[in-house]
Image 1 (cartoon, rainbow, N blue to C red):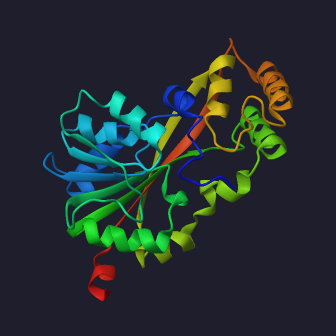
Image 2 (image 1 turned 90 degrees about the vertical axis):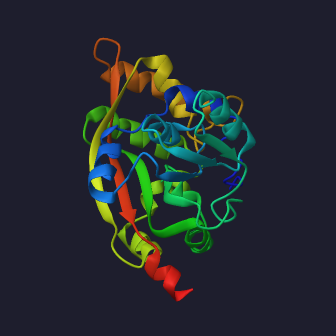
Length: 258
């Protein structure tokens, strides 16, 4: 497999344009249930192009965006340059480069499945303030709620290079319990994207496991995508449905054992 820190180097523009955002309700939930305040400091790990960071910046938080991939990090810096509370950091989940006990919340949007969980947990304990929270977020694409989504899932399994190996769905309840040493508090929100064919194509190519232009299987995959779209479009659009899943937990117990 390609090094996880380099997988998206050629996908940046499609990632910016076609990846889904996160529902604003997440911020309200964190305020009500987890004491998120305007003065809370966020370490967004694997911040990529800044999709999750932006949600907290708009809420008035200071955000350290920690991202190892230069192309993704630079895109995030461009997109978030208007927010004075954003600081871009070249680092990884396992070695963030941040000072100790600097963050009230650690977040990871669509990224935790790339981390070395054991080493990341140690680093999170180091940079998290006492009583702080770890917030793991995924836009979990539904795979069988419509005929189109069933067909799209089949397309990925037919053409994707290492879909099963890198799919975030492999982070199950057991993996989360191992990380938090307890069952996290989990909330779910609805999320959607609507695509014409060109934007559907961009959404597919934003995925690191989809054969890119010039790679084996790309032409065949595009033909299959075109047919899938034609079979299921309504007024020139198809819809991705997501469950946005948010796992919230503390690492205090781990910290006390260290």
